[in-house]
Image 1 (cartoon, one colour):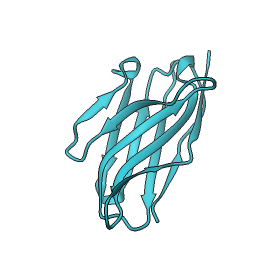
Image 2 (tube, one colour):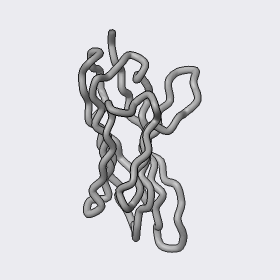
Image 3 (cartoon, helix red, strand yellow):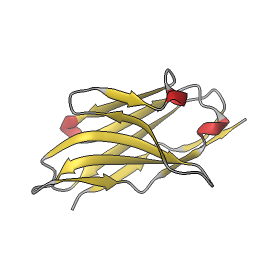
Length: 119
């Protein structure tokens, strides 16, 4: 069974930075896409950033130029560097991996980490 553990959330002032980490453990043969999603109170969950196995990345328009996603395949870990944070970035951030755990690929979600940006 694959588990994802996130860390790095917290409280920061507007304009500050945070770095989120998400590490996968368990039987993993390969990980295709690694994502970060977020969900603010009363809003739908949205994808913030995605990085594919080959390194191609996609970003939500509102975070382009401020957030950077990266991955370490040797450690099955994905990172999200968040700079110039804004109060509207406040949300629970979830990582998701599209992983092959032996038979087929499936989405695996982390438990979420709270990011709060004060004005």
